[in-house]
Length: 81
Image (cartoon, rainbow, N blue to C red; front, side):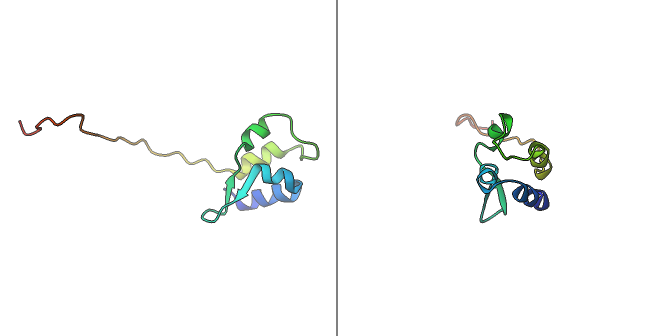
């Protein structure tokens, strides 16, 4: 998350709207609030900045996880044979 972009959103929005987008976290400074993307996908609430969707997308940094492979034994076969 980009702190400066999140703070810009907080300054541009009413507190009740900002709380629908982000919430404070003790480990990480900010987390996306539950339902934030659904709220942004619909009609924006009255008083929301016109560029809120663009501001929100600039505030997020997407990290892709590398592929993972987990191998488990399916039975009790003797693999030494």
